[in-house]
Image 1: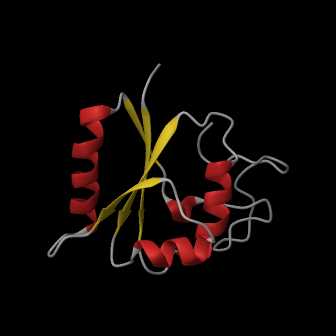
Image 2: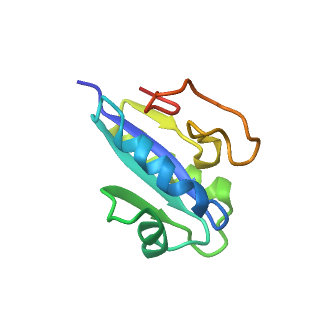
Length: 118
């Protein structure tokens, strides 16, 4: 069986998307993946408070001088050591059935619990 990682980076300003994003993560029909989250200027506790639960995730906090690209690179370097595949999932690309909060249009079919992968 393939080992799959799902990676995203969370940073200040995306908190409004996190509850819907995490509901979509939980709604996946295939739960055979490990969630990896890069943190850029935000703490684990802040993320979990917004989502409303503790996450079963591998957290990759920023180190002094890290750019968002460096956080992602550090994460992917670790992921490729133990996983067969990685799905990069951008939190801000998530859209709800009501439509994108940013654009006011639907980004996935109505009644679909899935966002970017399944």
